Length: 435
Image (tube, rainbow, N blue to C red; front, side, top):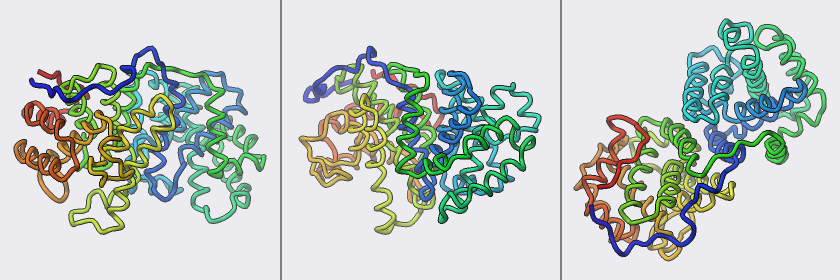
């Protein structure tokens, strides 16, 4: 293994684990990515969370249950990556197979992250009618919390079906619809809580975008906080990377492989362990904004038109905006949000020039290009290592990629190729040790 002496670690602390991150704040920020999936209908998860939390207050739930309910509601659709499925889930009729499939998928994802393991059981049941055997088998408290999410989810689906009308004109009809399903789709206790909470006009008016964000932040602020060290966010970032990569078979494992290669390049460049940890998180989350891109654009086999390319170009900016909401993640947000910038200043979305692009962002850009070229795409097959290196060198010549970083790739080509393609045989989520 060879390292390039010209690549130095960026100034600043090495990302000490003494700094702990508020999990509620991070989950709320990352939920913005889930809101992007619908492209046309946004903030569905936040509306469901606000309504479920309002019902929880009416039931006087204990603190831990309120927190679990709020996090489950915000994340309830984490098993949905594609715009086509999101559109179907907002229909009032849920008699199609994927309705329960995405709930199971979301539960499986959350179960992998220990701080949210209790939330996983709620998410798994959030499309399960109250009178079903599965609901009875789950235990009364879990079943009730899941049913509150289910009720709020269906109320928002009804609201979105009439979103061109003032919501105050729909409230009586929606409340009658919920009441008619008491004891069948919804628990009597949940229905009673909803009818109490939704009696006030303020309940419905708070669902408007300019009020909802602040209300939900206030709701999160009063709930029990769970903190994790910065390095502990890797598992949560891996969870969201799998959501992003699940959007299309052509991007399967892209984020996890980019993170693995970027981390390897960080080690090869001599970056300290804390910086490499933050670089891995940036790699896992660099394509969060792609959840907004319609499926048909990502999977198009012919060249993109100007409008479609403009849609693609938005994703790095969306990623930056999502991550920069959390102050301890602002450095990671910069690295992730600039992975399509070029040293010549002709990249996007900020037109950042070489002197403004930090080393970790340069390495992430190289990892992103390398892995994309190594992966099967709708318009071409995967390239071999030497072909990829040729493309990287041409990108150096055109002023897109960092020459020293590409030299690192050339000197460790086999190792880099293995890191970029490891997921083709199995997604371990682990980084290969350099050497």
